[in-house]
Length: 247
Image 1: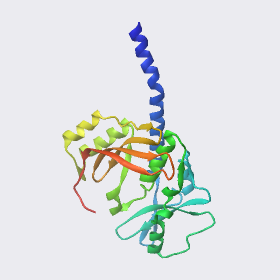
Image 2: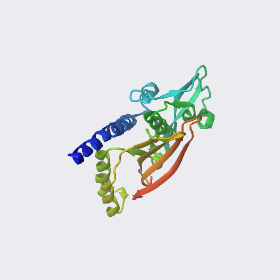
Image 3: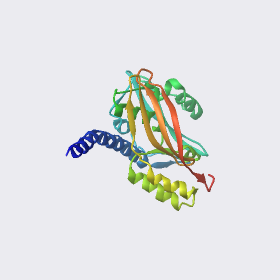
Image 4: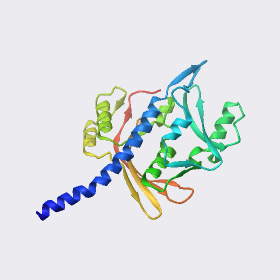
């Protein structure tokens, strides 16, 4: 009887952790689904983001536990070239606009650290707040990639369904090659997001699929005090992904 009560106690104590983990993954799935839904429209010889499929206000609405720095606003600039294209999230004062129309001048402007959107956001002091902050900082521009920009494509795997989908895709892919024994071992890992709150930082561990190089278990440290610096403190390569093509 004592053993049964102990087992029941363990099960009950795990329920809040399971619910939190599911909440974390729900956020990841929703924001990545929105990223995947972004479409292009043709403008002359180039493609650009279709405003019917993406607005900055809708995008920021998913990040409900981070705040934009006071008196700043976040915008999106899509940089396209003959070899690729990718978005840049920038931050400027609310009463200003980017007036320069020269493409390279704008590119240099939005890439300055003082204009990067990730340097002007503030997380709520919670696990989900820092998860949203981390995702915005390292995955926030992972959408609407074109051509060579796909070399840097990455996303988070946080559910068993997504993990199985990736395993099945790689098992018979003609574009990517993997060690099938190592691929099979992925079935044994848990894709659950782990968040640990410490006195001075948060530690967040997730599975990261860098689609053109490999699958990694990554642990990030985010300080709880401004400017909330992020450090990648652990990186374990779970699977090497090779390319059977070039762009």
